[in-house]
Image 1 (cartoon, rainbow, N blue to C red):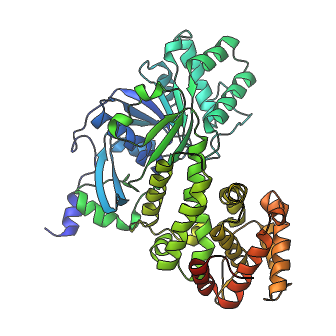
Image 2 (tube, rainbow, N blue to C red):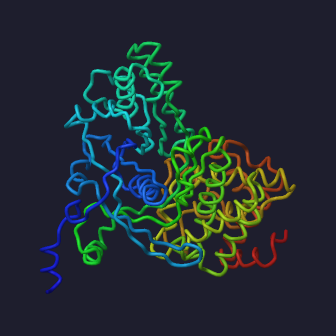
Image 3 (tube, helix red, strand yellow):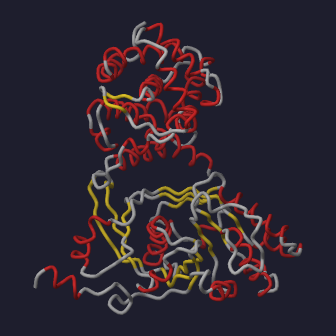
Length: 498
């Protein structure tokens, strides 16, 4: 039988051709996208298999144009592929996720969505409606079917649950948003309270909201490339069935949930061997991720690109650039962080494995978007903390800053760089680079001007002792000798001579 004939008779994945356990619905999920299905639902599936969580996930699509009905055509089943490096070994594995019970389109069947409020076994609410999803829209009304915003939909559901169960404190939810905004749980709760006030809901409901429900801030971390469109013919042949919801993710995962310790008893992730931490304060973990993973990404980008490398994988595998990245993390970022050394070292090792992932082509130019603001939020706190604690400049981070300024000249070996930033930043660098020549004195004046742009950095970087002088020396060598020689000098001898 040829492949074409096989493709014709292949069946769509569903519970008829893949018998699967049916679980009671414990988790209400807003968002049917790739990330939650490969992250939260994958973990719930693992808890069902390994820790007797016995929980199903009912998914609500937050937007009118969603995929709930298409997901129902597969009875909630779909395949997760995990591909990457784990414990130094290449990993490729796949498994059918069985925890999703159904999808609901509240725009087409609001009454079905409304009935979720009356299900006593529902206990958790998770969401990923993008950063724009957690927003207050004053035009939302309680009587809307549905409300436009996710927090509006959530408030209406909570109110109906309160009424149906007569304010029973045992019928509250553990609410864990996964949107990538700081203090996401607190922001979501504040907006729900805004709607409660806007809609004139009784004070008893507000008390129930505050006392019976637990809004958790959370930090999520897993790279999910998503639906592998180009590879689907091969994947379909491998699987032996059609699956419109295949999703690819990396093996690494981390979910930090800020909330009371008892949540870990109801959400048995640790018993399932998952990297889920329920903590009193997630700030150190957020700082760890932003400084090590995101900070290393941002710091390596201008160095690697000017060096002639295109992907993160190429950068960490290159002998010189790879050493630069490892020493940057080990000797300059980790010493500024306030977590146990073994945790930081293990996380850093995992980050480098993720950077090496041979199954994901992560282009450094995709990281380069808005690099000035990214350096400010991801790397500048490390630089200032290092100076304060060590009494000297972090050499590699300072070199990266010089490379960043060179990068914003918009040229690599005579070819233009497609810079992507806001117009004010691009206009400034276009003007400033047109005013100076590649002399040591001009480079110092240029760096001094760049560092004085407080709108870029939130401070005057010229006030950091020695930073202007050292950065201008690095920049001068990058411009006159090329970044390869400048980086080789840095990695061989340390700080450049005056």
